Amino acid sequence: MSDQLNVERTLYGFWLSPYMCQVAHVLSETGLAYQYERVSPFQGSTLTPEHIERNPLGKIPTLREVNGIDISESHAICRYLARIYPEVRKFYPIDDPMLCAEVDAKNDFITFSIAGPFFNWFVVSGYFPKAWKLKIEKEAHIYNLFSVLLSKLWLSRLVNGSRMEPFLLGKEPFLPDFQLFYTLELSQMFSELFEIPEMHLFRDDPALQTFYDAMCERPSTQKILAAKELELDVTKKELYGGFGAAYLDKHIDRRTLGGLFGREV
Image (cartoon, rainbow, N blue to C red; front, top):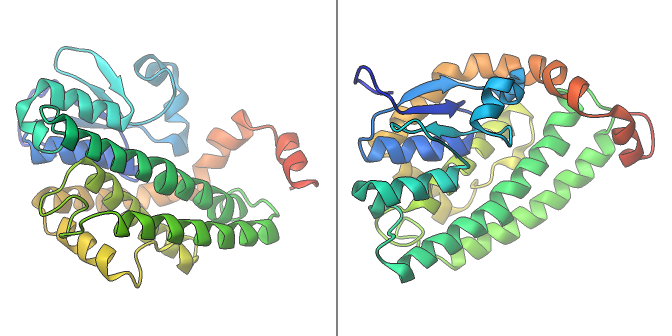
């Protein structure tokens, strides 16, 4: 992503992650150069000793800053950057407590009511029955319908409680706009990959479509989507092939899954 050589700042993760994309977007928008190092959970790379040393929670993204410290969790990384680099404060305005509180409120709402539940939806309704070949088609369908109801409810509250001009807080984006955009982008992709049309979160929603289109016009967005596309074939192979061996068979007890569903799955 960066044209500069000998960059000391490194972003660990992979482009399918909307959380890593959020951090990459802030870095790109503010001209903070970085190197990208791919760490894929679909290969078990987040659980290696090397990555656990960077991120004890075994997650992505992690940012290694120019001073050598490692920072994890996308919101924490972006807030850190805003405290260190004045150019980041247009996205997280630490000098304006009231506006900052509004940004935090949107971020938290998206995290806990939209993005988090969406990943549970994807795993149970899309990933388990297809990639892990678990025999839970009926349960997955029920969970899919339940998730549709909740997602539409929370998204409508977000839209109705925001300015949408075209961004959540007005004419310029803030951190929650990046989080929302990459969650919507992933929903569009997963709806196609797993053949679940309802998983497309902004279909038939004019306000969210306008928001999505406005985000797509930004050069930083275009760079990140292009990088994501270049990596997509590798990611798809891992998604359907490597994740079961790297994660399910080593870290999840199938007896627990059987107990969850009341039968062998």
